[in-house]
Amino acid sequence: MENLIIDGSAKTPAVQFDFENGSMELRGRSIPENSVEFYQPLNEWFEAYAKVPKRKTVVNIKLEYFNTSSSKCILDLFKKLESLNGSSTEVIINWYFEQDDEDMEEAGEDYQAIIGLPFNMIEVEEI
Amino acid sequence: MTLGKIYNLYKALDEESILLSFKGVFTADLLTSILQIMESKLSYLAESPKIKKKMFNVLVECLQNLYHHVDDSEMIKDGDGLINSSSALLMITIVEGSFFIRTGNYVFNEASVALEDRLKKINSLDKEDLKSYYQKVLNDGNRSQKGTAGSGMIDIARKSGNKLEYEFVEAGDNHHFFCLNIKID
Image 1 (spheres, helix red, strand yellow):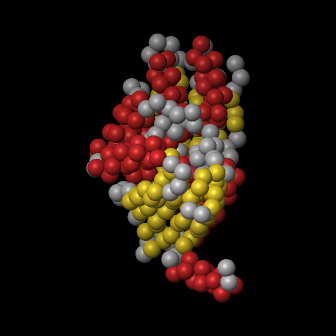
Image 2 (image 1 turned 45 degrees about the vertical axis):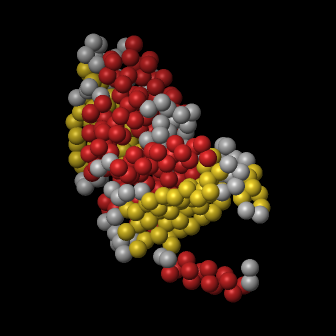
Image 3 (image 1 turned 30 degrees about the horizontal axis):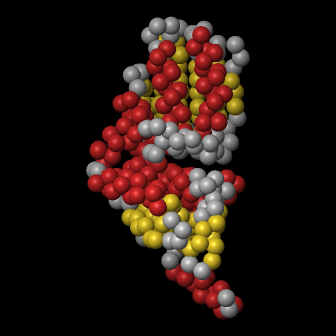
């Protein structure tokens, strides 16, 4: 299975989905006008991964900004991860946020309230 | 317009501490440019990184709202002339360390009723209730075609931390002009 690597842009995050490591990372900003279109290949990669997952799946969310239309796409991805968790892989979500960025911290808490997956809230100086 | 009015307009914009103002149709390219301009302006303002971040976040959401009207554009009669219904206004000012984002756009009469209901509800909630309302809408909101799920205004209210000031002014052809003033401090 191939990895999914997408460079970041002014409106979209850098994507690094690594099959061998069972790791999925989003980094930067996710503020496209059409989020559904951007997240489509990410969902497709995950569906293929879900058939042959690694024992551990680590998700690293390192976002500086994201818009509400992306928030729904991220939730959809988390829901897919949730349904996979426990049976064939163990999912961990690392939610990064910058010091004093309480909005991004709260955004992580929003997902924690909705999704039954273990979240590590990780405060860093700069994303 | 007489040439002297250009100077008057310049002075007026200066007195109101307007960082950026645009009237017209908000295209995807324009959104990118406005965000770039504001990001560089924000970088040299003395305000705290926290406020700048909130400001940028709210601006992204506002622009998205204005942009999503581009698709259903039509010519409507407002006053004496015909106006493109996706024409809108954005104005960003800074007053004593607080940012204000002001937007204005046309909405269909029926849509304005639903929007006003949502705004009333948002303004009636405190911080914690707003948080659970957002989570509820995020989790079970039916996503519109554009994937916005109607959570934009709630997000704006949460990040601004202030009540949303708004008004619906009657315009022509089954439309209202929706005026929104958001304070970020």
